[in-house]
Amino acid sequence: MTTQAAAVDIRSLLIDAANLSLSQLPMLPVIFDRVGAQLAERLRQIAWAPPHFTLNGIGSERMGEALDGYEMNAIAGIFHVATWDAQVVIGFDRNFVFTMVELLFGGDGSERPVEDERSFSSIEVQIAQMLLENAGQALQAAFAHVAPLRLRLERTETRMDFASVGRRHHPAFVARFLLQAINRGGEMFVVIPQAALSPLRQALSRVVTGDSPAPDPGWTKKINDEVQRTEVSISAVLESRDFTLADIAGLKVGQVLKLQATTRSRVKVTSNEQPLFWSYLGQNEGFHTLCIDEPIDEEREFINGVLSR
Image 1 (tube, rainbow, N blue to C red):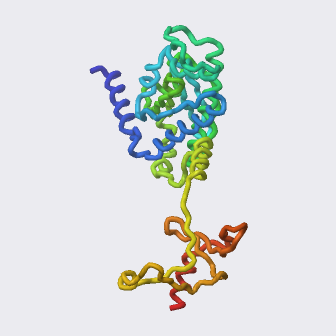
Image 2: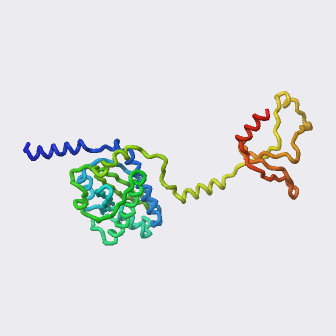
Image 3: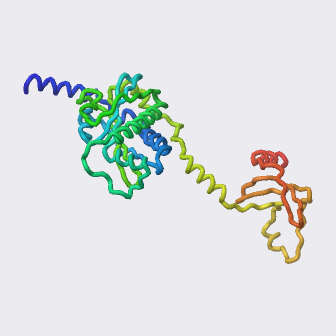
């Protein structure tokens, strides 16, 4: 082994030893899940059919190896993160770009997908730049709960050897997302150098709870409408009495059970044996009516019942 080769091997070993593992940063998968949800929500505002994003995996790879797999087959955006003094890469493969172009222009997926290996057109590159801006904002929003940052799109590249944001043998975290829309698909990838996340190691080692993606307003309205239409049965109880089994066995047809309640007594309105309201009995056009007086406070009723014993 030559001296130069030995030096390279030693350097690689030192770099590998300093690598962060995904298990040390449990917050990172949570953040990338948010990226997919945030981006889907943003694109729903401009696409006629809702796109869906699924986090397909996160791994630690060398920068060059991660990008080489997309050579001549993707559009990548290089973003500068001032607070990290670093850059990150967000990119879309060919199928992602073609799917989104068709989706944004009203396509329904009925035409055959583009399968040639031609260069991206000027319109496709401009649309990809718009999508990259949205993806950058989604990544920025996803990190907001851990470390506020601001991403600025510096340039776009279709040559992945120009898209590297560090030495090609340096480690990076790579997240891949699967796009599904109009019966088509594609892949989005995010490459973040591990060196950029090292200062955030402590923050990313704690899972932040208590937050969730914003609910889909469409689904929220639909669920609310369905709940509002749900039919329930209610009962009005004027008075209840306790009987023994002997009392029940002694009941005869025509026997009258006297109640202590009067026309001024309040009626308990229940549903599925759950007390709801106190009300008063009345009449209107030959029908019995109930006038709601107040909601039933079960805790107060229980305390009053104990005190009256």
